Image: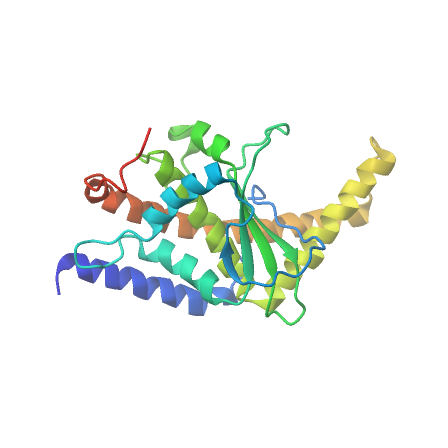
Length: 259
């Protein structure tokens, strides 16, 4: 077996071990997680119904990166592709949206949201939102280096950045949707706390938070940090795959970045 094939095999093995084992763990508040009452979707998988034709063009570029293969038909990005394919086969519905408004100042590149929680854990409806403008404008340098040394988006072009963020949000989706109790905590702890906070600000504005709400916020933020740590670890793996395949992909017309 060649060294390249062995590398891919090792990454696939690590990915599937992660799927089996990592969900026993609890998993930056930068990721917005909430639930909202939405109609149950009739179809499952990763759906692009909410994208405009122009957004679909950019999505196809991301998709081409996800499913890129070498001359031996081995995936260049096995972790990213594995996350995508898990969603497709999960029975859950995950819509893809592009953020079209920058009225609210935020540095968030993407979010994963549960729109409808299924108490049986069989058919959740969720959405991944990508803020392409923020991703394009994101600063890359020492100031963004994480504790483990990883600098998001380093050496990546625009489409590759989108793919990295997609990997981060897909990691959230897989980590949450594979575990009913974790999905329930997202609804009970995160969504209810968010609603209470919004209600508090709407009614009292400058009034200080109650002790109960402070406790709920502490619990929510702790849970979100655990979720973010999980997604950041997977994002780093996806970034590594994108870097290793970059030279080979840039030689292929269909995968070269377009102006």
